[in-house]
Picture (cartoon, rainbow, N blue to C red):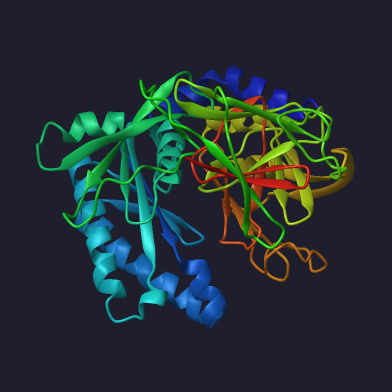
Length: 429
C-alpha cells in the first residue's frame, strides 16, 4: 500500500461528515475501568500454562460478577486484564473496593507465594459507546491511570474524583500528578483508600511528576558490580555529576562502550534527572513500573536493542472513525506499530517484530517473540500491550531487567538503575 495510505484514510474519514455525525450519536459520558492481575507470570512459571490459565479465568470470573453486581459491563479481557464500563460513577468505585477485598478471599486458601493481586484504574469522561466496545479519550486516560497503579491499589482520575466527591462515600487521597501522552500539562491522580491496614502508596514513578520541594534531597549513585554487589558510592556535588570514558566526574577508561563524555545527572526543583550526552551510544533507565511507549523509543531487553515505531496518523484515524488500531492494521495491510531491531551502533538492521495483537510477549524460551541464544534475556522477559491509543511496556520480573533509552532529560526515581555503556548505577539518597 502507498506510504501516504494512512493519511488518505484519515483525510477520507474527516470528509465523511455523515459517518462522523453518526459516530457522534454514540458519544456520551461513561466510566471506564481497567484491571490487571499481578503475580500471574510467576504462577504460570511455577504451575504451567494450563493451571495458570485456569487461575486467571477463575480470578477474572470473580471480578466479572462484581462488575455486573454494580451495574457495570465487562467489555473485553486482554490477557489477564479486564476492561469494563459503568453508568454510575459511585458504583464503579464501590465495585473496585469489592474487587480488592474479593482478592483477599481468593488468595486465602493458597500459599502466600501463590497469591495474586490486581491494580485498578478508572476514568470518567466522554467516549464513543457502542454495544460491544468503547473508544476515545475516556479509554486512553483510563488505561494510562491503571498503568501507574501498583498491586492492591485503586487509582482514579480527577474527573472521576469530582463525580464521586458529591456522594461522600469514599476516602480519596491525592497521590501525585502525571503526564499523559498526547495531552498538555500534568494531571492529578487520586487513590481510593479501601482498607485501614494499608498506607497510601505512591503510584509508579515513571509517569509521576514530583512536586517542587524546599528541601533538596541528597542524591547518590551506587556502582553495581558485574556480580550484582554494590561497589563505590558517589554523591552528587552541587547537585550534579557527569561520567564518561575519559571526561567527567566519574571516568571508566577501560569501558569501550562509553563515549568520552557520556551522561549527566543533575537536580532540578528537587527531582533528579539524567541527560544523554553520548551522541548515539545511549543512556538507559531500567523499568520499575509500566511504561507508556512513544514513537521512536529505544528499548533494551537482554542483548536485544529495539526501537518502537508507531504510525501516529493511523492511530488518529482509528480514533476519528471509532476503529480499533488492530482493525486499522488490517485495513492498511501493515502493522500500526512494530519493534525494529537495532545494531549496537543504533542502526536499523531491517529485522521487524510487528505488534499485531493486543498483547505481545518477549522471552528467551517463552513468548510471542523468542530469543533462545540470548543468555541475558529471561525465560519470560517482558510484555507489550495495547489499550485505547496507547502501547504499554512492562517487565515480567526478568533477572536483568528491561531498559528504556533516555530522550533529552529524563526524571530518575529513587531506586532506579541507570545503564551507561557497561556501567550500571543505582539511584539512592
